[in-house]
Length: 403
Image (tube, rainbow, N blue to C red; front, side):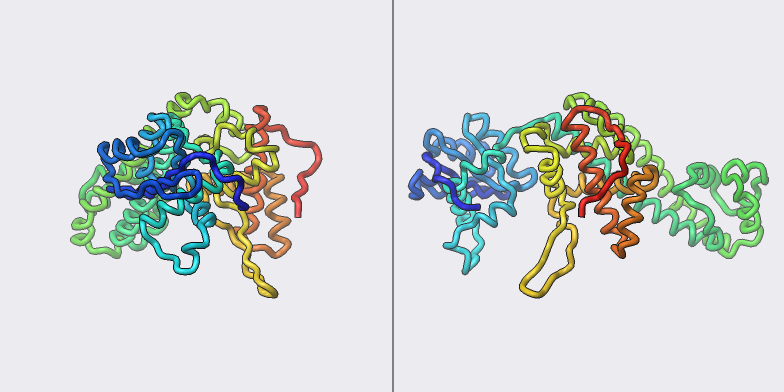
């Protein structure tokens, strides 16, 4: 980015850590006014506010939850705060430290103040504006994904434990059959399991009752080992049931958060696009900005969101050497995962997207590359319905993928 006209006011670079912050205050000419270490407390915030000249613009990097307190307090005091992506701040770093590449909090704060003085006019889109309902919705989606991962890991652990207890019963699936977990929680020994009637086994495992009965008549596992491992399996099954109930409760809370954030209309529009379910639509809406129209035309918005989510192609070329083009994965992982799931669902239930996948597969492209093409189309469809605020309508002409 070429430097625009320097800002005609003081700038402050703020490098924030978990327990402290380093501030560097420059005037409009680039002269250092203050350099100081501040504790991450209210006293530190008060000290910084007392030193900042009137009209100072503050620039800081996005550092997870650590920058939120500083940005919120400074904004409440009437100071314009810019929260810049760390990758962008690194690219705008000056030449003074480019060769040595020293890394200290003081240098980082100085670089942020310099970046704000030279490029502040081009960084207005990074102005801090807190939207509590949207942050709450996005956080709930994060928690749901984390709990889902925990549920998946617990199911795998319980399946491995069941395989130790009944090695030959590999046809049983705790993930697909919830009645099976209820059966194992009701009994407490191999003898009681072997004593169940055929009708009872059929109630819990349906068509696999005869196979399970044959396994129980001559089990490979010793009864003593089976009974010793039974309490551990029951503990895992109780945890699985608890996590499943929490997932249902989280979905209800996400629906309430969507209403609180006034995004229910966007979720309804997203659900009209083939491949988008309630979970994927809620997650993507939570990660998308509200002012899509201010980003430009629909194709431009789709390209920006593709980079924002990290599902854009990353090229590596130098001279005659051409590296493998892969997905950048530098954006929001939560949204990228939801978009991947929407693409895979569309490939199963939308003949148009299935045709796109098959065409790319016939060209010799790898599976994930083919899915990435479907992801791009799904994102463009989502942008179209949200941009126009109209439900999805399938065109009569077949879809042509741009090369």
